Structures are given as structure tokens and as C-alpha cells.
Length: 195
Image (cartoon, rainbow, N blue to C red; front, side, top):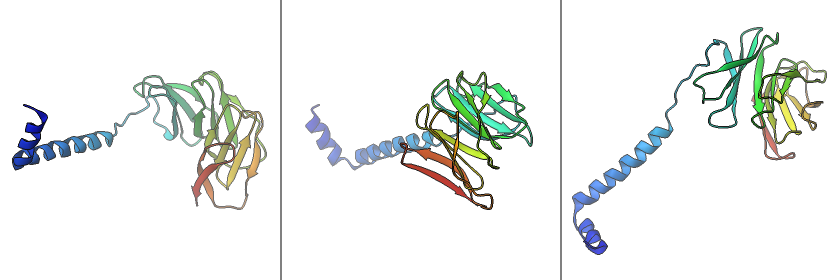
């Protein structure tokens, strides 16, 4: 049967058109539905409050969480099926984490940012300016330039990979808090927050 004959039959048969439209609708619905499914995973062995997550690939990612005084950073290499604790017991809650590649990352909390260059096997505390705030998010555009934001309108910036951080904005009296930061390049970025 030639294509012209098929199209002629299709146009002359209302049931065939309805069936075809129904098949298309089911295909679109099933595609949309499958993209909206979420699977809950639990990063055993911790039951701590989870604060932030960062994945660089489909398989490898990090989470940070805490209870009142103890923090944890955990890593997965199998898309969250299993998790390994990398750091705990900072003595301060950990609230943010960001990795620029598979090896180098930063994690923040109360008046602190930690840095790793070996996938989180070791974390080193970075020198911080004088401020009293919780770091809620960290974002780097490359290995040197990054920002950290937090409570009390805190915005910090580094241009040397976190060896030093400069206060861009901070207010001891503000009840505005920043919870997220993202930059497109060194000059263009967005900070979000609230009270």
C-alpha cells in the first residue's frame, strides 16, 4: 500500500483518526508522567536534617546535614543508593555544599567554610572575615571565583579559591536572609532570600 493510499484511508476513516489521536495523547501523557516521578532515597546511616545537595554527574554527589551541634558531609558514587560519611563533628551545623568538579568543593556553616581538593576525603577550614552569620549557599564559576551567602544579608566573595573571603555585604541588624546564589559570570548573578 502506497503512502497516498494510507493517507486517503486515514482521512476517510473517523475511527482511525480517533485511534491515532488517542495513541498520541497516551504517549504524551506517559512521557510527562514519567518525568514527574520522584523516588525517595535515604542517606543511611544518618538521620540528620539534610540541608543541601550537589551532584556533578548522574552518579556522584554530596549532601550535607546536621542536628543541633554536629554536622555531616556524605558522598555517593552510585546515584544515592549508598552513602559514605566524609566529615562529621565540626561542632557547628553544616548548611551548604558546592563542588566545581569531581575533586574540589566547599562546604559552609556557622561563620565557616571548609575546602576539599580530594573528593571530600579531607576538609580544611578556610580563613574567614569577621562576621556572625550562617552560610546558606555557595557557588563558584571556576576554581578561583566564588560567592557565599547567608543570614543577615551576608554576601562573601573569593577570587583565590577561598584562601581569602571578602565581605561584599553584611548587616548585624538585618532580618533579611539570603538562601541561594547563582552566577552566570563574574559580573552577572542572582541572590534569593527572605525574612
